[in-house]
Image (cartoon, rainbow, N blue to C red):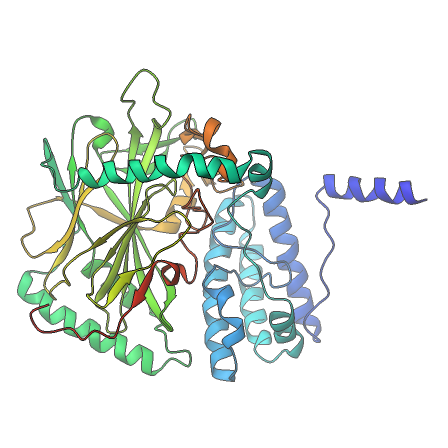
Length: 484
């Protein structure tokens, strides 16, 4: 009897059947909506071999979660705070459902509308549901790690980390030696923004907006409307200077070709952007994310394990409570080469036994300044990063939301994600994966979608960790002077 039960369980798992969690609602319409959304996401999982934009928990099929949202439930002590948190994860759920509906090309308009209505119904029911909040409190949502621990076990990680530590530090020193070197054949790219005098006025508007949003927030963090988010992203959009040695140094849009394979359209230089949040020094801070894609990282020798198709650079600006840049950090879209730039003299880097990012201090920017990022040819490494009002004339960059990367249209009209079920762009695999696997990073060197970035080989660190800077930076009581 026991063996038959085990066989039935295995068959159920192989067939894609899953148990349905108990309902969190007492009314029949909400229970029906739960089942409808759960069944839909199971269909998506069965028919579409790509990873959803955010973490899906079958207990809450109308919501979606990131590492920031899962760090907050312990602080939800008031009804107003619960409402704000629920509004945030419901907003992620709306983006999630939008993506999943786009993937499922054969759905009728009636079913699409029904699913969207169910999402709204459950959001309304959740705020008053004691069962819902009991689940959030007693069994919090947990985002899976981007690391694979079994690889560290079989790869003798403790020994491997000792061997590679010196190599990582040597590579970081080499990257830092390249800072500020002149670039050959530089091309400048940027988003059209306000003139310098108008930028001062825009900065004051942003400060007022951030102050008002925090004042109205039960959790003291700004939840921006779409126009407000666009205003911030546009105001702080960086200018990129790219050393252009080959076609691989031309930024472009990630698209699907006639065979539904990912490709970079360099006729459409595009900056992908979005907002996120982090917690630092007891405050919740807003972050601006900008990603620039290239068609390849060309080989520098006959055997270059770091070369391959596709490359991308991810720049993130963390704003202080007033809406002024406080920290800039960056990675390649593989999660490699984490760099952190502190923009305030009150910030200091902390010592750590684990792998440290490349660390720099920069002068605090003036309201009219824009971020200027220089990238080397081929490797697309940051060779300079500073704020300046002396911006060169630039080739225009189109802008797209980051989640647009997950809904690319094929020539047959189908909407697909270029990333696989692990959030990895398989076509961008690098040779380095064959010798870096003992560190537990999935497919090292390959490009991946947001939320899937493991950014350290020694220790564990995720780019979207809700408190990432608490392990990297500390704040002193030093007071800034006007000259700083």
